[in-house]
Length: 359
Image (cartoon, rainbow, N blue to C red; front, side, top):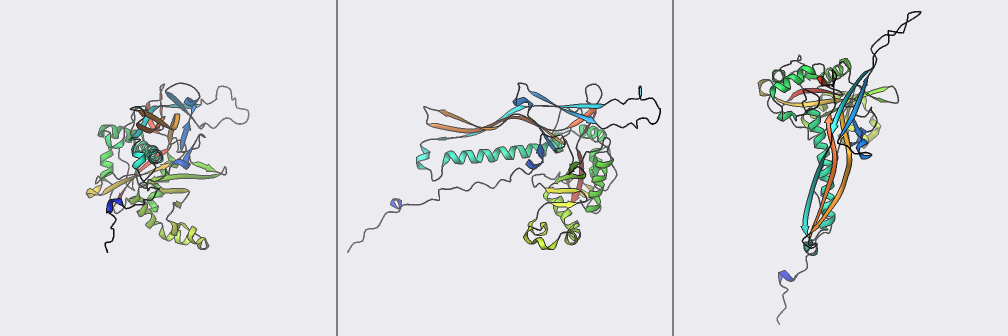
């Protein structure tokens, strides 16, 4: 008796309807964004309410005078407000994908929903990467900003000189020659330890003007430190005993010792941002160096004229279906200078940059 054999190509193949997208980290900076001037990443959406291409961020420095006492005359002894401005120009960013609608009949996944999902992930990743670029950016005039990797050595030296109270080379002495400062950083004394973290915070507190901390409940002052995985692991090891003794033991799985969450130390929250890359072997004896950014209020300006939105396009008589995402915005590290145009010796307002060696 002959038994009918079903040809391979005639067999039904069941594919899982859902699809797995490449794992992309959520934007770890989102919780530090806000319209309030105390936010680390200050959002300005004025251009959503009116036309224009540039928004203005204003800084009013605290008063430095001592006033008068007793019967002393106040008139003529007033103090001028230290008002400075920083501008961000917005631009349009778009990205899109397209498919032939015929393939919707053949595909095992929903192509339309798949496109929307990956585009929104791309947008989150794009904003995150631009914030990281802004944190490390170099500006010598407060208006032109250059990514660290693209900046010239003379510009890095000028930037370092302008920000001498806001740059730390591990535990080493400050050096206005930026590349020479990096060459001082070694793996014995200049790694991101708890002791060197103190130096980073002390720089923020003694800077002129000081880096304004974030206030919680009107009195608690905090700074946020963003750094890459290599530095984070060194610091995690340095704080191991402190964490072991300090964290309550009844939290169980909620204890950061088990969950691998943020590190908290001396009024600082240290966040691991794996996308913050190292600078290469630029330290002493070709040591690897990675930056850490201690941030206070108004570290980054985020001007938004149009929040991200989905855009669509059809062509070829409706056969080709395109979907994209578009935003009109600008992201920059905030600098405040002096002089009539606020461009003389500009300083990064809310950031202290630290450089640390790792193995």
